[in-house]
Amino acid sequence: VILLLNSMANASSKLPAELAAAVLSSSESLPADSVVVKGYEFNEGVNFDGIFANCLSTGFQSTSFARAVGEIHRMIDMKQKDISSENLVKISSNPLKPRPTNCTIFLGYTSNMISAGTREVIRYLVEHKMVDVIVTTAGGVEEDFIKCMAPTYIGEFSLSGRDLRKRGINRIGNLLEPNDNYCHFEDWLMPILDKMLEEELDSGQVWTPSKFIHRLGREINNKESVYYWAYKNNIPVFSPALTDGSIGDMLFFHTYRHDRSITLDIVQDVRLINIQALKAANTGMIILGGGVVKHHICNANLMRNGADFSVFVNTASEFDGSDSGARPDEAISWGKIRIDANPVKVYGEASFIFPLLVAQTFAKHVELFPP
Image (cartoon, rainbow, N blue to C red; front, side, top):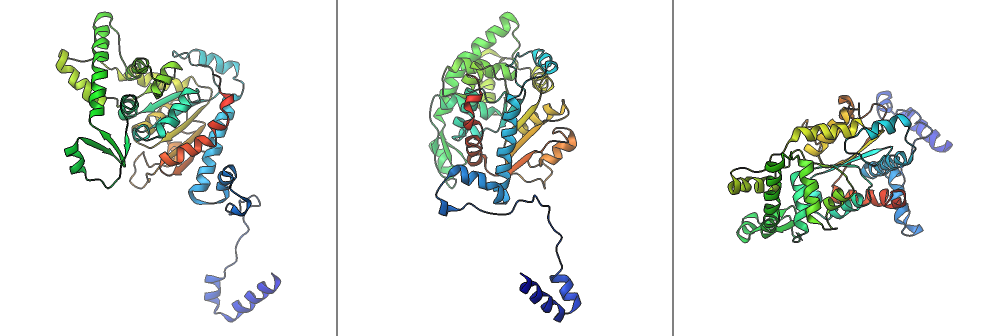
């Protein structure tokens, strides 16, 4: 090292001062606790826990992934802590009467997560009561029920839309969904809508998107369904844009059967989701994708001056000013994430990232969640 330094000094002494200053400027020391970049050593064999643990020192999105694992572990750890008497009083005043927890976890995802095999990962979390509040889109609701009736298939991103249209096959990325699946969905949903309209007219029942989804979760009675388990475990599912999909089509068709369809009150639901944040001891947000699900969860947490823990997984960039691409720091500026929090964003495609996150967090601690 001494010889190298002497060599560099000799070399720099022969260079023009301007060149030496530009290229050979000295460095300041980094903090003593700085993580050294180092990848996984495959000469030690294949150890998947070791590979994932090593992500922290790998760099780029590997490091973000490892930090997201840590943030979800902090949510789980907070869940297990004793609830203060003050927070117990607050939780007990929640009109939904949720099971008491020291950390209310909000899970949000876009419809493609249910279209893809990520659905089974989400169902696992809901089945085992690992999350407390769900926000999704219309497609994120209907695709779950449709899969109970008929399958979705793997295709290719490059398939011709014109050809598929002629064949009655819809493409979702590289997934294929026959249009007959939606016909099965209509056949199942219409009699339920008839019954719900009858209840509304006879008893004054006020429907909201969350009550609508709760009812369909009861009606499907299928353990493969995310929303069967949400119904079974009293986990509220909010979908403020519930009419923006096949469900909206069916409600439209339903008006031709009865001159009107059921009424959906979205104001009750916005009050209810905000109360889930207000009445929580602590909150965590896990949000896959962007758009309405991301903002709806973040905005609910604004009501309590921000979430304590946050993980975003999406591919969007911030440079168009969209909320979808906004980094967690932007949410801090709005009061949607607490100033002292350590939120994480993973830039990646959630159908690949999320199962790995669950494998390294919730799935390792299933015994911590009561049956």
